[in-house]
Image (cartoon, rainbow, N blue to C red; front, side, top):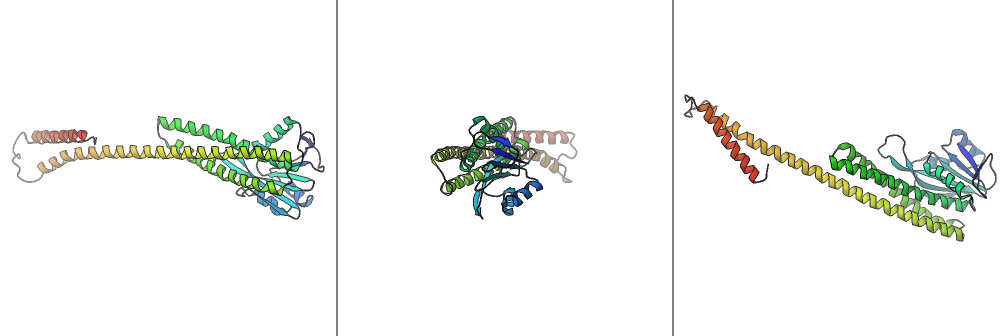
Length: 308
């Protein structure tokens, strides 16, 4: 799906392309890709790079075209090992053509358009558009991190009531998401530092870049904090599980030792040997009493040694 936006005074949709407008392409179809390649002569490998979910944040020039790949947060609608991840957003520019391409429908881009329409001032140029996309991505990283933190706290409350596999697996998946976040944020930061010297930055753009740097740094530091907290939480519950396992094994071992003595006594008196109680009417009772006494003594010793 493609949308043409007039960006001069206010962000509003138009029916066809005009010079210096913004072309937003979301989840491009085969028709959209053919249009971009044939009508605008965009290098075909630009689109294939953007479609690669593992493509890193970077910029590239080819035949006058500039490609910028920005990693933005994305929430998967279906159950996945990594519910929160990042996807590439491609920004393509040449002279009076500015195109953004994303192969995923993201809340960030929907909110970006809505927010810019509320601002009612449009964009000064394509550089302003690029850095505002950077700023929006940083803000949305912080939003997603708050959601991840809420899920971490919920999982911790569940684990406080009882350690279960579902909560532990959920924490593990959130750890994977934080790993994707921190890698993408660092890549975006490095890309931003390079673009400051590659694009024609004016005084207003410099102020905007400073805001982006602040938001990016906050997102990176917040991700590191949540990652450290999650790692510490996983280590803590891992220690709890190991301690519970040791306690259970110690208890079972102690019970086995206590039960071993009656078995030993019964085996000794049950041998086909002369032991003095073959004809005694109290032989069975004596064996039972000895077993009870020895088991009780074993139990008291184990309790005294705090092994039971």
